[in-house]
Image (tube, rainbow, N blue to C red; front, top):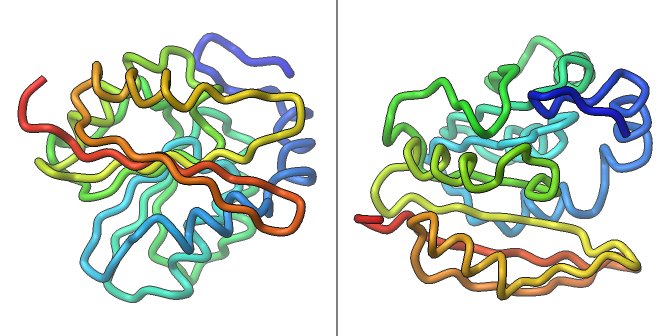
Amino acid sequence: MRRDASGAWDDATADWYASTWGDSVSNRLAAELCGVVEGDVLLDIGCGTGTTLRTLAAELVDVELVGVDPTPRMLEIARRQTGDATRIRYLQTGGEDLPFEAGHFSLALLVNTLAHLVDARVALAEIRRVLRPQGRLVLVDGLVEGVVHDVGAICATLVAAGFGSPTATRHISGTETVVIIEAVRAEAV
């Protein structure tokens, strides 16, 4: 996997990811379990091929959906798969530099993204900035065999970044296990 300084993958890596993981159980479970409701304004950081956003767009009418990814090829694939008839907006940027006003989003979603951020602490500060007070952050990550996620350390990192009350749950779908960590934007850091 080759990335540049912005975290963008090269085209070959993006194509491999899209064909291997673009429609993974993690993406479908994220849409099902993230708790988005009508009226939410959702930001999907590291949206990849847009699978989670398309699933949500098909199920909900009154939700603003925005996906960001640093990789131009991933966004090209997402836009092609999404087509013209949608209200999903895709932007090329990493989680460390979100071009949105403070407090714009009610929900931020990271699906299989945390490990790919160039600087997770900077990205979490940016996510906190663009979330409304009491806005929710939901991290969804597939547990790949041989990869160990230190959920306690991730929760501690969220608290240090200004998120309160992180909770973690595991969900099993077929042969894939997914961990979901939810936290709320705290009032003060």
